[in-house]
Length: 182
Image 1: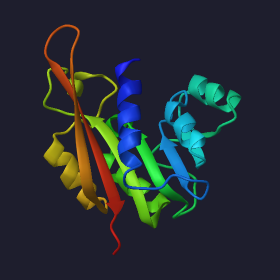
Image 2: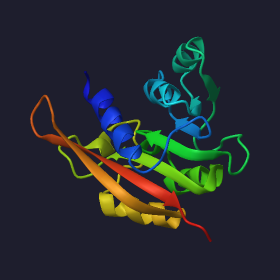
Image 3: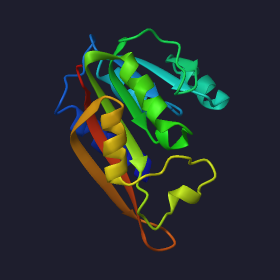
Image 4: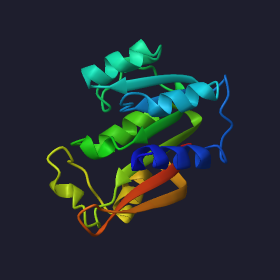
């Protein structure tokens, strides 16, 4: 099992300690890839929708019977308060305007909605900030401040540490957040 699959499973199991995933839950998987989280949510009975900009991922997911849309994470065409959960693993670091993107997630959540956000940490040997596709790579404290400014209260978090093939360590940050009611 690869590291991303393993972390997805750990994050998913942790999520289930906070929420009941059932047929009434509407879930949005932002940057759904080829559907690993879509499958897990569907197996639990949730109404799951994915978004991606990758045409291959879109075709693969649709061929598996998933509802997946070609949308930018910062400009989604869903109505306000459509989802109980937004699942966003390794996608916001690709946003050139992460605060706006997080506000978009907040807009889509019902008042009791939950966001799971996972991003690479800035302070690792992997130096994600130099990845040509990563525009928003921040420290844990910076992410917490950004989430707060976007209207989220983080109630739990995880750090996923793993050795790199070429030496050193990499860390991913996982944030479990509630939409603040204002």
